Length: 79
Image (tube, rainbow, N blue to C red):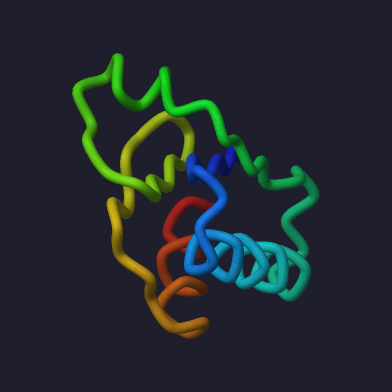
């Protein structure tokens, strides 16, 4: 599983990434999530937003910041 969070370093994006790391640890996801500040890839895909979560190359969240439980449910769908 490849989890990538594209964000320019916003406080909400940093918190979301911390939440992603917590969820990955609790679900024993062995692949480390990536925090990427270069927005070229999602923009090249036609995605617009300040914070974009991709799982396995598929856009999952754009400028949405779910609760830990909702984030856990999202990640579990991809296990």
